[in-house]
Length: 295
Image (cartoon, rainbow, N blue to C red; front, side, top):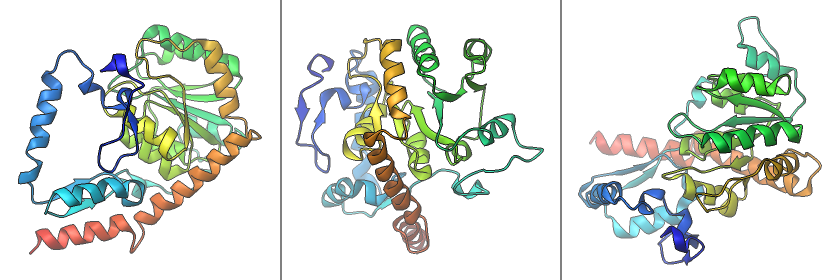
C-alpha cells in the first residue's frame, strides 16, 4: 500500500478524501497479524450495546453520523478525555511559585508564544539519525524549545546548551496551557492532539506509526491547525536545514500563515472547551450514557 501512498481514497463514510499513506500504519505492514487482529476486534463492534469515543462531536460529526446509520445502538463522543480538571489555571501559568518545577520557572521567563514544546511520545520514537537532524535544525532555527526526552535528556542538554530546556518528564497539559508556549512538535498521538487543541496551541507534526498518520491528516488538512514536518514517505530523512526553516516560519508571530493558523486554533479551543461545559456535547453525552446504563 505504501508504494501508492499519494493515491486518494474518497469512499470511506464520514471521512474527507484521504491518501493511502495516511491510513493507520498497521494496514501498510507486510506482517498482517496486527491488521488481522484489529479487523477481528472491529468485527465484534456490532455486538456492542454502546460505542464510546474519546473525541469531540463537533470535530468529527460526519464520522459519528455515518456510524449511527450503520449501528442501532447509541454512539457517544465524550472527549477530550484529558486531565483538564487538574488545571489550576486554564489559560496560563503566569507566576512562578517556590515549589514549581524548574521548567515552569523557565517558561515564566520567556516571551509570550515564543517557546516550541517538543515531545515525540513515550512509546515510539524517531531514529537516532533523524533525532540528530531535529536537534541541529531546531538549534539552528534560533527558536526557544522545551524538550521532553526521557532516555536522552543528558545528551540533549549538552547539545542545547542555553538555547532551551530539557526535562525527562513534564505536566504536558499545564505546559501547553502556559502563555509562553506557542507551538508543539508532536508525533500526533490522540491524547497529545486533544491536549494541544484544548490549549489552543498549533502543532508541527511528525507522525510515526499507528493512528498518528490519520491524526496528522486531520490536524494539517481538515482542521488546519498545524503544519507537517515530514512527507508521507516513511524512509525519508528530514534534513536539518528544512527543519530550521520550517520551525522559524512556524514560530514567527508576524507570519500571515501563522496568524491564520492561530485563529483556527483559538476557534478549535473554544469548541473543545465548550464540549465539556454544562450543556456541551460531551457533558450531555456522558449524562445520557450514565442514565442509559443505570436503567
